Image (cartoon, one colour):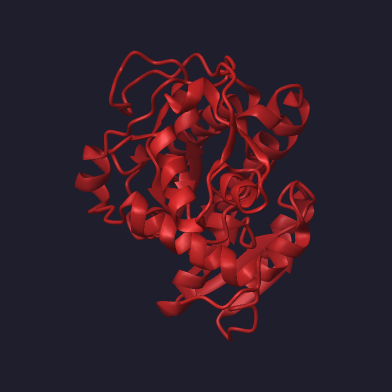
Amino acid sequence: MSILVTGAAGFIGSTLTETLLARGQHVVALDNFNDYYAPARKRANIVPFQDHPNLQFYEQDFCDKAAIQQIFARHQPTAVAHIGAYGGVRYSIGRADLYTQVNIAGTVNLLEAARQHQTEIFVFASTSSVYGHTDQIPFIETDPCNYPLAPYPASKKACELMGYTYFNLHQLNFTALRFFSVYGPRGRPDMMPFMVTERVVNDQEIKLFDAGQLYRDWTYVADIVEGIIAALERPLGYEIINLGRGEPVLMADFVNVIETLVGKKAILSTPPAPPSEPKYTRASIDKAQRLLDYNPCTSVAEGLAQLWRWYQAEVLREPTQ
C-alpha cells in the first residue's frame, strides 16, 4: 500500500507522515514549502524522517496539474491524505482568489489524478469552520453548513461537494474529515496555541477575544492523526466525519494552562470577537467512533505540556526534562 500525503512538511501532514512511516507504510509526500509561514520551520518538521527508506519526498505544488499527474503515474498511490491547503479563517478574508486557486482548484487536480489512476481512497482535510454560526450544538455532520463565515471554510465546503461528485460519477471513496482546533508539537506559528506560547515567553501582548469567553473543541494532533489513518484504511463510499475531542474548553482556561507551563502571566487585550469567530465549537464524534473506531484520549493539560516540551526543544533550543 502506497499513501500520498500532501502538506507533508506542515503541522498535521508531517505528524501523519512520520506516524505512517513508523507503521511500515510506503509514503509519497508532497510539500511546496510556501511562505505562508517560515519554510525553515517546515523543513525542521521533516528532519526526523526525511531519510526514511519508505519515503519519497517531492518539493512540489499540488496546483501543478502536470506534475501531479506524473507523480500519480509513477507511484500509483492506493490512498491519498490531502492535508495541504491555505489555512486560517482570518487570513483568508480578502484573499478569496488565492483560496479558490489553491484549496479548490488544487484539490480538483488531485481528485482528477486519483480518478485516472484508480486510487481507492481519498481522505480530505476539512474544517470545523464550515459550521459557522450554527445553532446546532454539538456540531453534527447532518448540518447543511450553507453559511460559511470566510473564504477558508467556503473553500473547504466546496471541496466536500466536489468529493461527492467524484464518488457519484467515478466511485472514488471520499472521506472529508472536519478537524476541530488541532494543536500540539509542530503547530503552525499563526495558530493560537503556538502564538500564545510564543507571546507569553516573550512578554508580548495577546488578543484574547471576548476576554476569553469563547469555547473551542481543542483536539491533540496525535488523536487527529489516528482518525486520518483509520479513514485511509476504510473505503466508506462518501462520508463527512467530525474529528474533535467533544469537550470544549474556555479560551481563558486554555491560556491559563499555557501560563502555568511557561511560568509567566500573559499580557492581554480583550477586544470583541470579529464576525468570523463563532462563540462555541463542539464536535459530535459519534459518527467517528462508529465508522473509524475513533477514540481521542489526550487531555488539554497533557497536550499543551507536549507542545511546551517541543517548543522548548525546537524553538528555544533549551533542554527539556
